[in-house]
Image (cartoon, rainbow, N blue to C red; front, top):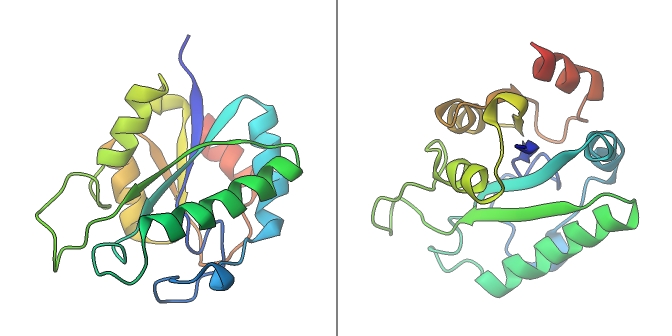
Length: 165
């Protein structure tokens, strides 16, 4: 049996959008109000998977280790409320300093990897993001996309309506 997933952009969806790279752990602020609607979906059997561009790594603005610390904070915040994030996929590349890659959104590489790794049915899944490139990446992997405003609370009923459409 295939799994179903809620794919989530990170900055502006799960943590506060600062409109720049988050380079320090102390600037990483989890949007706690996103956890209850996502916990409801988790409780219904959806995997919670992060899909995030982190080009600041290629630009030497922060390191993989700092990113891992931020993700540990995020995972712990969800676990404290009874929900588990399955995995956080990130693209460390940046078009100004890296060779072209297949993982950077709006390309779908991270979603396709997650779908293959976790045996996910794209038709039963959705991607929530705050930029058109998130929806474009989702659609390229056969997943429906939901565009929200930066830091806008995820609407459980809207997500369910999209999943059922």
